[in-house]
Image (cartoon, rainbow, N blue to C red; front, side, top):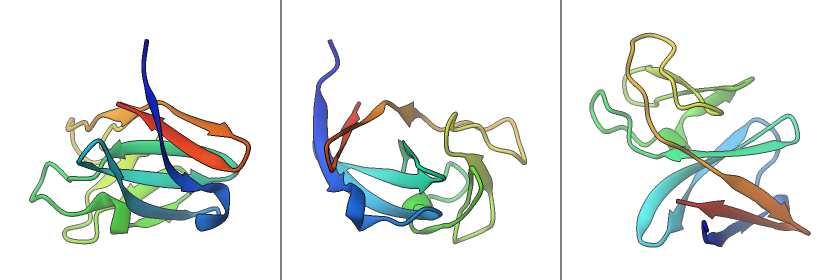
Length: 100
């Protein structure tokens, strides 16, 4: 069974924001989009840009380094066939938990 780790509180991110969090020593990108929470790999496969620092519009995060875009719910790149991992997120009270 998957183990969930607390990475943030719901008050830390407004809708349309992302941040980099640590899950078991791995940098993971956490996003809050229209009341839903998502987690993906933080590293863009193009040149290693930090996706958690990218701009978020709707369900899409744009890599701050070279503009590659990813659907935060699936990890699918909207510009190429590249894909990053998406991870389960759950809310427990005000805690945001992620499982790898």
